[in-house]
Image (tube, rainbow, N blue to C red; front, side, top):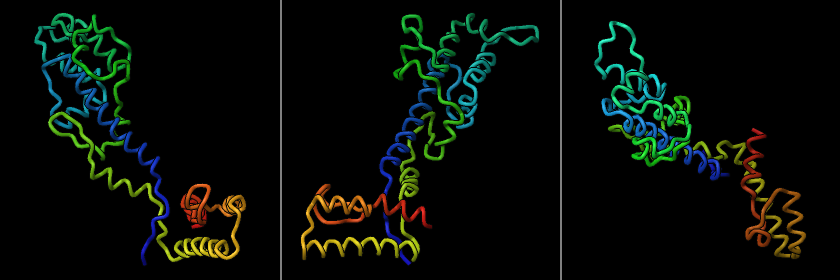
Length: 226
């Protein structure tokens, strides 16, 4: 038994594909922001990335505390104080990841960043929604084109059973009968449009031409029936 493609949800797929691309861009944006505000730690592994995206503030502070060597007498160092001691602009880093607008003339690291400022950093849940469509390599995310192409099948409606194929044949035969009738007796185009509306069909040239199956209507019929 074969199957027949009925309808492809192109608009929905394009929206999905755009979301994958946006996710990759936002992941790279967070990494670039982290790198711009400190030079101790690079996001080279997926484990580092997961720590960063899970909590950008906590990860930044842990790197700061682990990198600035100062005797605190065994007490927990204050990240804000540590940052000020070594001229790290922690407040604006936190503003950047929180999506709070910053003023570049007051934020030297911000000048290095090309991404739009004022947008909140990507969350771990947003990343996880599309992570299987991304490739992480050497601190940079790219779109997994092969995975996205495979996902395209999820946006296609097929007639893949004898019952569904029978419905397709019925609709195609209906169009054939109407077109034969038109050839013999001629149906005014205004009447054609009325018939199409009543029977959920289309015309081959928009508002003119032969009767043809409306693939979207047919896919809805198949999905609601089976």
